[in-house]
Amino acid sequence: MIITTTANIEGRKITAYHGVCTGEAILGANIIRDLFAGVRDIVGGRSGSYEKVIRAGKDAALEDMSAQAEEMGGNAIVGVDLDYEVLGEKGSMLMVVASGTSVTIE
Image (tube, rainbow, N blue to C red; front, side, top):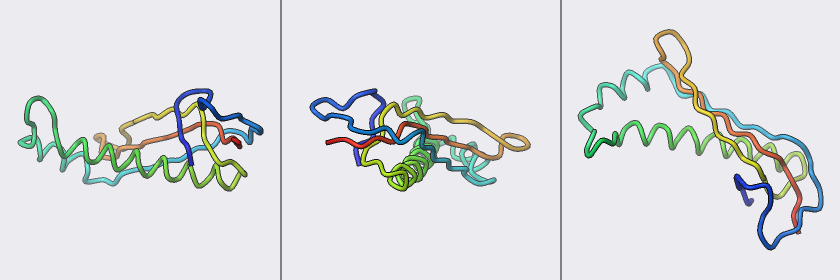
């Protein structure tokens, strides 16, 4: 399935719009604490542990959104947006939400 942040897919024609599709991922209670414990991972201003967690959340949300788009009859998703939010007491959870429009392309 093609997933893109753009409104169109170059060289492909959108033949049907099926509506908004979403995917959510909420990553557990110990992740944020574990990330801070892994601050020593920071090399050159980047935290490898934090990047892995964010990537896992993004991948899970996109997979969930893709499954919903397929259930709606789509074979691609356009206009994708990703949002990240810290939730829970003391910011103990990370939520990733992916949203887009399920479409059929030729």
